[in-house]
Image (cartoon, rainbow, N blue to C red; front, side):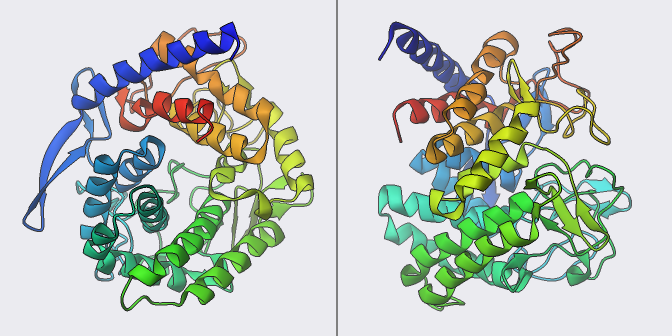
Length: 401
């Protein structure tokens, strides 16, 4: 390793030690189903709780950290809180993963189950945990939840295309305007014209099918055979590039709803590579994703959304800001697919973490540099759980893991 490489590793190691100490400030114990679980709140602001327990945040942090005990507690929590009925107020349906443990009301509805992909992440994280630990006994412990999550995946896929639709729980819309991690709103839409297929969630569905196939032999009463799940993964990957690739821009769509394509160059295209093995992505598609991503580059990693597009704002929560956790996923996915330049751009997040700390998101505007970026916006956190996972995840890239 070069001298520059050794210096960069030392910077990451220092950040990782600071992050480990910071994570203790988010620790909490919650009693679920008669069991005490050691979990972590999503974020603090000015030393006070700002975000509570989120299924998505816990599972993505588990995937980045790959710490067995953290992962087990996150899997227990999400499995124990899976939906069991249809509820139009909360978005609950059987097997659907929890968005937010607290009951937060927006637009006359609750955000509680407003997350389309948490069940998919549950299955992916369980398979990753099994591969790392060979802890078959734990998988047996949460087998009921995993079967419910796989049933949700199967129910939501129509010929391999994963569709989000509040009509399934008896509602016309959700409390949130989008139900994947970029949940503030979609460009050019107040709400999607349901049903909607989110491109990033489609890639997560591909990964969930494969993960379910890996778990199938350990899940008594599994809702589908290993063979059927492998076939489901192949069909979902086909639909990803057949239905959710925009031939006009030669770039993935952000989403496709009843009103048509929701176009835009966004970080979703790079982000989704984390969930796809190289065999799923043709070289032409990979090159097009890399070209499009050039318009997202900042000194601190990739923006969520490219300048010059509808609803773009460098200070927009999901349509212009830089999110540290996403840089870690992009770096890992880029390394997997041989995109060395994308990996290096994602590594720039280290400069932001050293300058600003483990914030929820960064703002950067070419005209102002770092002006105004020393604090997150009014909804942001200055200590965010999945931002704290970034140094360890980037170290795993350096280690070739």
